[in-house]
Length: 136
Image (cartoon, rainbow, N blue to C red; front, side, top):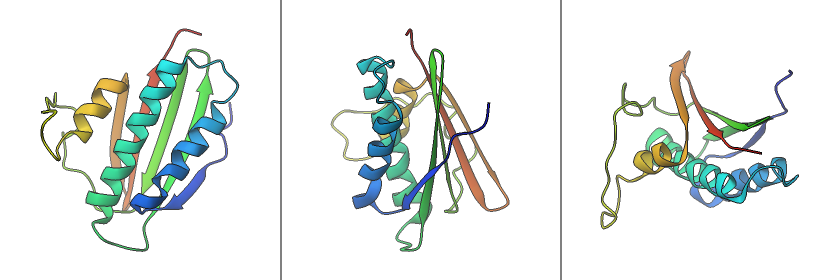
């Protein structure tokens, strides 16, 4: 299967909604349960916000690239950016979080919404893959 065409938006907080709009458009055929789509949307927003806040950390020239791949029983989101790389092991450790805290919840939220997470940085480009399984 060929990878679907990607979507890109500026790496700014006020533009993250464009990523979720693209996700909903790609998943709009109704075959994905609402609960799975909500989990995907929440994980995407948290991941994109982390890219903007931590990866780009104030850079105004950042761009976030998104590919959405639909398969029977799974949706795969592939995000890439050229911001600062994440600390090794940050996504693989269990991340409990406080509902009262003002920050530090993003990774825990992503982990609770997504079934498989993969991250690597190569040649100055960060690659985050999020997979959500569902029953059609």
